[in-house]
Length: 319
Length: 224
Image 1 (cartoon, each protein chain N blue to C red):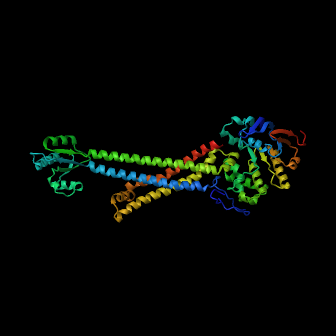
Image 2: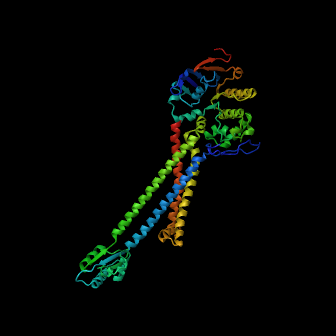
Image 3: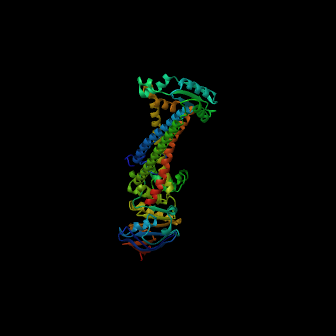
């Protein structure tokens, strides 16, 4: 009889000729701590899947934003007293067009410039009185980019009030944010792994304490620590796999649900990103599925190795 | 094979339960260990099957000093010893067959290599029909026979038995004694701790008498 009060096998006498009942491990099934462990590993693997998924989403978003930003630069031309801003814009456009590595330029009208400020300042009459700089959006050839330093100098020398904005600062900030998020996700994964290790140690100790008499008999008939460890490990192998797979599947389901919310009018940014993560083109989803598939394997390895280490440690302390 | 020199044992800070125990078991010898309840027989057997270490004195098993032996070498020695425990120590979650085969399984043998031998042994001790039964449904005598079968299944060099006939009828007790004698004839050193004076009288083996932690010897005829 095990801790749950259930019998491992039906008991009774075997009629002559009946096949022998042979179990694959000599350790009894101690259900209580292992069931708790499976549940805890499920939750941890779920959190790990969410953390990894979030990290993948952030990486892809930052990659996309950085790519967009790196492909565009802007020239701002401020109104300078005594200078005709339209003439200055034309001069700037000429200089830019003469520069190699430029794919396209677009001079934004004053109205378009004001439109960019509207989300922050609202649609007020005061906007018309503000000396809003005029913008030139430039698309650069990322394969053969222009010499930005030379362009900056030329613009400064020839165009009054012209400033070249390469968006480097934004790129730097986005990269720094992505890096911070990566570290944060890494720290979360580390914490989850630490908790998993602690739980497995606790479950191993509980399982061994509950079977102290079994361990004694095994010792007295000549069992080595590694034999006992191998018998205990089998229980943790299934616990790790079951918890890992359940948690990861729950994580995947969460992302699938988030992608489905886009269809019901929920904010679409996250929904689109989740959708791309799971249901995008195979060349991009392949890596994501591979990372998710590793989660149950890592959980199993953690459960197995920790249980083995804990068994050796506990056995040495009690015998 | 086994040598005790001035061995003493105490539990915690209590009084010594074994005092200056000195004896030697020659290879292939057969002896009984007797004495009143609480005399220290089980403690002496626990020292012999390496379940504990003495408080003082020297114990040599198979030519090796137990006190200086590392933990990793203990299983090798234990595999050379067969033990019948007074409380049987059968594992309730394993069948009778699996309990009896346990020492072979622990030693890394494959079931195919020992299945027939174990079944034959179960047949010999009258448990062939109980191979798939679990210990909780066995009677005291059946448990005892299963425990004995487990102790002898590896044909150990040293057999230690704590009250091995305590729960069986006289006829079966004699049959089990014959099994021990048979094993002894094949070279196994046998030490049986028992209260059963009738059993002792059936043999001419040396009798070790333990009383209040002190060991004395008698020959098979009862002379000191």
